[in-house]
Amino acid sequence: MSAKIIDGKSIAQEVRAEWKLRADALKTRGITPGLAVIIVGEDPASKVYVANKVKACAELGLHSEHIALPADTSEADLLAKIAQLNADPKIHGLLVQLPVPKHIDSDKILNAISPDKDVDGFHPLNVGALATGNMRFAPCTPYGSLVLLQKSGVSIEGKHAVVIGRSNIVGKPMALLLLQHNATVTICTSKTTDLAKHTRDADILVVATGKPKMITGDMIKPGAAVIDVGINRMENGKLCGDVDFDSAQEVAGWITPVPGGVGPMTITMLVANTIQSAERAAAK
Image 1 (tube, rainbow, N blue to C red):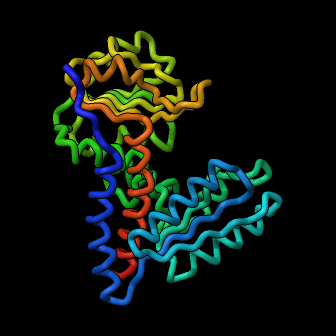
Image 2 (tube, one colour; image 1 turned 90 degrees about the vertical axis):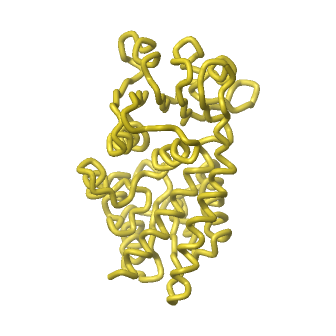
Image 3 (tube, helix red, strand yellow; image 1 turned 135 degrees about the vertical axis):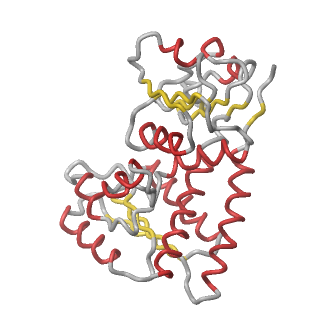
């Protein structure tokens, strides 16, 4: 067996085209969805992420604002900027790129973003809405992972899904999204006893641990769908996921590559959340 490769790049383009139609429909009513991204400091990876978000907005004809603040920006000044953008009717989505400098309380910053504009899905009200089955904004990486499964024709309902990782950004919301789609869900961590026993039972396996090539082919159920959220840089400079792709693809039914799998979907779902926020604002 050789797994079907889930092409995140092509699926992301398909999904963006679908959401562009919705953005264009809003424009006919005089509404252009707008996303504001705040970055504090000079973190190189963050600068790349922000540039990609701005580029995605441009591709879909969205309004975007990139606010770059110096690393010594005070917490009070950052909170004031967030309050200004919360009140700006041109902005439907607002995020602060993490990490922020150590003198700034990231929880306080995330909580200050209006839940109606929290397109990252990190505000406690949006986390609670997801947990109670009344999703407003899902965090973009698990949301994109779910869409990859759906677009690839992977059946979720009634299947056993195993999520490895319990982060608030990926693991926990991923489990909640799968539950909403009627999967039976097990959450494991890197500390789970006999992890392979759980992974071999998984019809759908989502891995988000940050440990390179942690999951090998002999830990995967034949025919399973494997979503590798991890991205790690090896000593030779190459990128790899949390799954050992070479051995896993010989067993799995579907598998995401790294890079080119989940990554392109994360920014795609950020744009989707922004357009959805604009639709809600228009409905009001």
